[in-house]
Amino acid sequence: MNKIAILYGTSGGNTESVAKQVQDLFEGNADLYDVEHVSLDEIREYPYYIIGTSTTGVGDLQDDWEGFLPSFTRLDLTGKKIAIFALGDSASYSSSFAESMKVVYDEIADKTTIVGQTADEGYTYDDSMAVNDGMWVGLPIDEDNEYDMTEQRLTTWVEELKKIFV
Image (cartoon, rainbow, N blue to C red; front, side):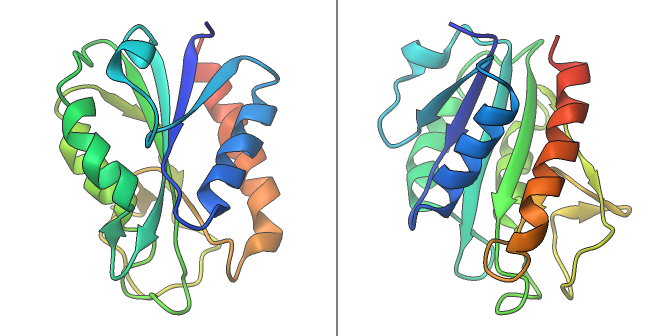
């Protein structure tokens, strides 16, 4: 078992693909779990989590996370560090871009330490509740319209996480 668990929920496969890219950037030091098939016992002992979700509809949480998040929040997250990434469509859902990460954030922020916030720079969208004072609560990814920026965004984000997840 590694120290980092990457937990993802995916509907169309993009979030799984991004989660695998994150795992690759950790060079074998992170374990990957689909929340549709994972048990709390499998992930309970990890000190670090990376949560990945897609945003469905107008800022809604991905279905598998909708079912898993209530259980996950019952874990003792004291002393753990959690980073969040969310996929969204900044063109079609420009007024609720990547808001699923805010849903996750709101459920766990008072139970743990959230890390991996990113500056609201270089994104094209109108509004998102996932931005607080110019910072995203995690890392937004747009595989529909800004797919050419995903690799660099992930690389930069993971390099920052590596400094925290020690």
